[in-house]
Length: 424
Image 1 (tube, rainbow, N blue to C red):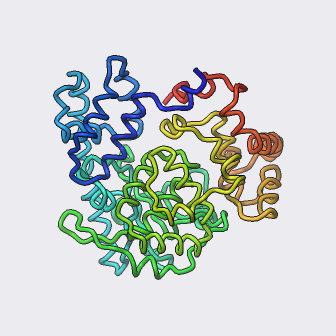
Image 2: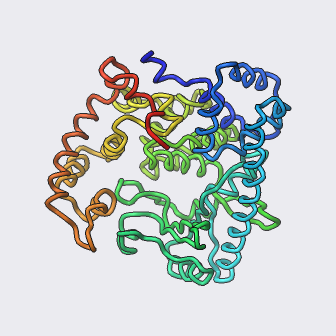
Image 3: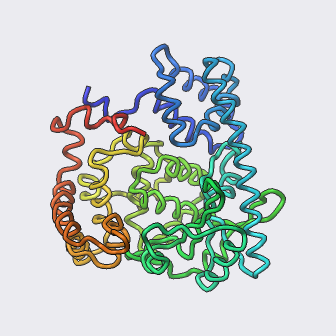
């Protein structure tokens, strides 16, 4: 019983199969059809599957998968109706996002700003056979830092407004790497305006910004050429993006594997060289190992040697994850686990001590990243914050040492390990 809480159920296995297959162009494979059919047994829980697929915005991809394998008509009628509706809605949303993207690129180019579009629609064109089945929540625009103020004016002119919550724009510029701009009564259009791709507080750095620009590739989107990251840079960025979600990034992992299928040995050398320049080798290793634990091995032998986890990562970090947690994007003690990951990703003993100290006595960066909830009318309730910080510090240290053991021992009950108990 306990082990079943760690391993995937048939509904979760099917979604992993669909996510993995959705980035393989023009797939119609009898073996794939047999694998899907073997999962759709009499005990298959369509309610659980549809809930999970809906959470990950994969319903359109599910429809596309079964249509390509000529299995759609075999599905329950109610499931067919939901999937058909979501399939057409997804393509309509994709066209809307595509229009918004081209509008932004056009207006920025009029101001002599040449953005790189990260992830999203260009990635859908590069990776997906049915690109309209890839849902996009927002548009990620990377521009040179020198063009930031002019790019902000372009977005405001196009009807977007800055969303900052309790955080100031100055804090975003100092401790984050993008602004969030929104448009529409229901905030149905969101643009993340990036001047960087890395948190400045994690000792990450982009030394050779020109390399991103020079190696950016062109993708045809709606009849217009749009620039996006080269595939080696895209793989690196997808790994970092997964880490910034503390490895609870189901689709990011699927797309990492999708990109990896298209990389040759020289591309892998570029991935590792760039990662080393950015001081993100540990992040790449962690993301790749977790991705392979969910989607299967995809690295070449030489690349695997470069991403072999050390003992601490294996026994204290990787061991704190398990397949069902990765699929549902939930872990026991999830909030504290995020802080454990931040601690682990700090480089050097001194920086880790500083991080622990600032949990109790926060600096400006900690206020921005962790304690914005303690702001009341623009002020910070410091007494609550210090008391809570000391309590959090104890939890972080304890969970760092015992999380992996707790996940795979009889200490935690099956219910505590079951991600479905966490409502979505």
